[in-house]
Image 1: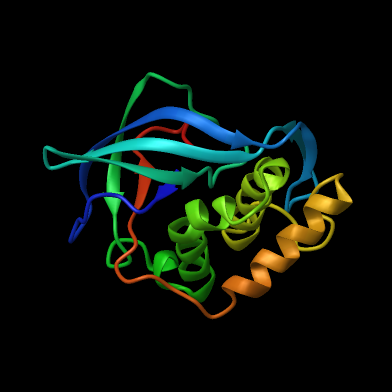
Image 2 (image 1 turned 45 degrees about the horizontal axis):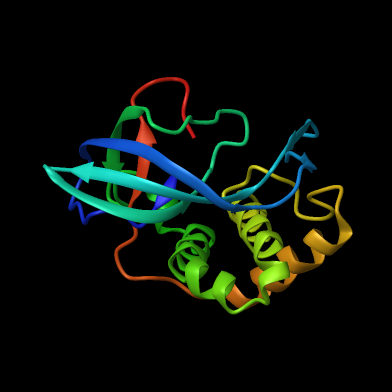
Length: 174
């Protein structure tokens, strides 16, 4: 999961727990960058990340289309910075971080009936930015795809200061 977690200066052990997925969009087919498809309900996570004994709850999104995590289970992970993983310093990851940071406000700015779609569009935009889903026609839902494109345009060239990621110490992760 990619989240703005407690600040870490270099890779260090951490624990990640999925507390909730809300809001979440209805089930759609998502087209991966490698041509495969998966059906699911994209949305925003509420995560508790614990790094160096300090816990924080943050919004986050899945960055691995093929490996999910379950609510209520602790995952041993590594809190990683751009110094540890150069991908995190790229413009695409910076834009993903900006979307994650702004997710709550972007969702709240929508009328109540559009908040689930906004969360789903944010998730799909994050997947695009980290290379998990294709750039055009990322899902089977035209309205969702249009909002993904608008969010990508909004995030273009933006970044947050000091984003970190939580990455797995095991082959299965989100």
